[in-house]
Length: 285
Image (cartoon, rainbow, N blue to C red):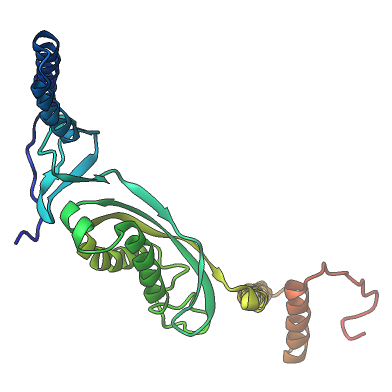
């Protein structure tokens, strides 16, 4: 029993078409000349020959079945003639796009997210696509959904809570897409489907937590910015104290140094511009 695709080489359709016209002309001529109804039997092969003609367009195929038996697949494009009793099932070999609607799933740490994919695929093995699964196009849709759900459970959306995670869905890029491709290849091979490319095309937090997560991201960004500002301000204060000490511009005791550091830090780290106050007295007033 055949369990793999085999290519079928049909006869030229043009030769059979010429023979069909000759048969039609001969049958009609004999009926007219002899006026014998027995020659009408010639219409039987004429009718039987017609279903055998088939046109296969570029990047298309025709799976041939004879009384439940797989006979082969026509992959060459052109005009052909085959056994008229063959059942012909057409399958496109063109590349196709599947753009999934975003689905709600939980990531590795349990956060609900919305995620979608775009898949470029085509039929590679017409036998598997025809006989190993029911409705291979629907099979692609269902398995793509399952692969996307599995992928989402393997990685966190981001690493705000788990900083040790190097790969995340949001920033994983090619690593995550490659993992998705491998998962789809493993699932769709049974249907004779070739995965050309698979990528995540949409990812976001689910609506019920999107606001909270946005505030968390904003807070994280503010903390990171403040840390950078403080780090720079400390360096500037240190440089100012070193310059004053080296050039002996003014001699400051520890108390005045502490006051100066406090004032500089306030000026450098403040959100608003500093408003200078002119001291008309001495440094002690």
